[in-house]
Length: 99
Image (tube, rainbow, N blue to C red; front, top):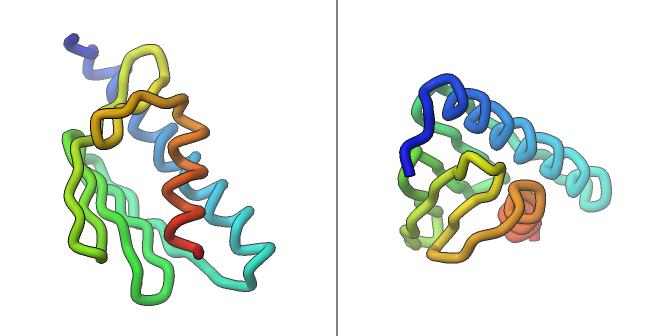
């Protein structure tokens, strides 16, 4: 399904914001700090030596894993072939990085 450019941009910004929010929340409990780098075609979340890099079609992690990634017009996320609500996916990604 094709997503309009305007909607795609809004979803991308929302995804970065969700990652930032959940990283901050997990940081409060762990005392660790995450850095979020955000651009038009790339989002990187860094925690110490760990990182996850998102493009519009994939996610790569410092662990060496590479999986498919996509934002859907209804606000869901496809990550490694599994669809989830955006907030649940962002929480899972940041929790794993902050662990």
